Image (cartoon, rainbow, N blue to C red):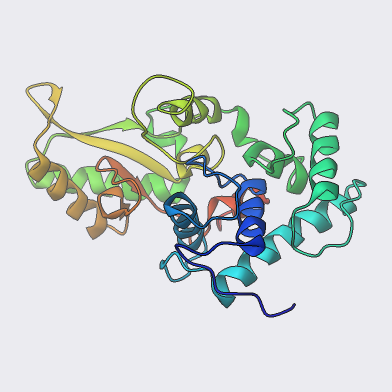
Length: 275
């Protein structure tokens, strides 16, 4: 691979445009940046989100490591398309007209919206067309039983610990359906309301039974006491859960997750947590 320029806020030119096309083609354009060859704040934020996904240094700078991971992910898609019989051209790591047309043909044949973008549903059909458990069609549930067994155990330990600390905490959302996730993603974008998530259906740990939301209650109603949320978050972390109150992009006080070290693309690609 040729040496690629380091890109950062303020950079301009054809490689910024290539970066934006790759990010957009992998369905990462959650903030609607413009593909114009200008590395603006929106582009930087998407780069940081990508770096978070792959546990890269979150500096918003596209250096050798970020370039490498991004290009390898595009190559993976290109190879898989060709393997499925959809010629995407040489797997060069750059999304161009041939790759986009191959994605569109794949989406058409799988009765998906034909936009040429490898969104979560397209990714799952491409990499894991016959999953043993198809999470895509499971309904939403507030029950701990809808969670991955390991996550369910941690959730119960967490609830027991909140009781021991005189907190009335209840799970308000466990497994979230992909359709519900899409509705939340649309909020503040194509639907009224404020932004609450950057994750489409299939791109949230809720959609895989690896996350749940919980809230402290007071007099039978959800409390607005931030200190109670902080205490709740500390107790969740104590049992080994990751707390959304520590998130950087969108702080999510009710959110807890246990990911087994997997990102959602791995899950969409068919990789599953250990039994």
